Image 1 (cartoon, rainbow, N blue to C red):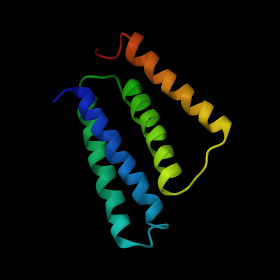
Image 2: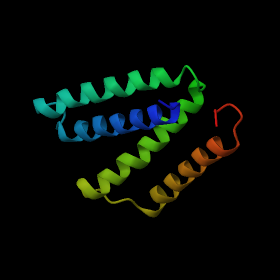
Image 3: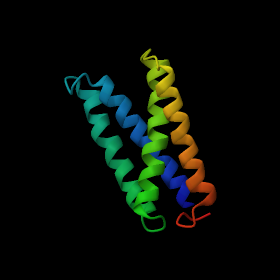
Length: 110
C-alpha cells in the first residue's frame, strides 16, 4: 500500500479518535471511550509504518495538519462549533504548509 494512503488512514483514525473523545464526555461514556483508545492505537500504528519512508517531522506535520482540518470540519458540522475568521485563515495557512511540503520538499517521497 502506498505510504501516503497509510498516512491518510492514520489521519482518518486520528479524526475518529478525536471525535470519539468529544463524544466520550470526559470518558464518562464507555462506548466512545473505548473508541478513543482503539482509534488512536490504530492511528499511531499506521504512523509508525509511514516512518520507515518519510522523516518524522514531515509525517507529524502532515498528520497533525490534516487532522486539524478534519476535526475542525467535523466540529463545525457535527457539534455546531463555529470558527472565526482567524481560525479559518490559520487553517488555510496549515493547508498551504502541507502543500509546500508535498510539492517542494526533497525530504518527502513523491
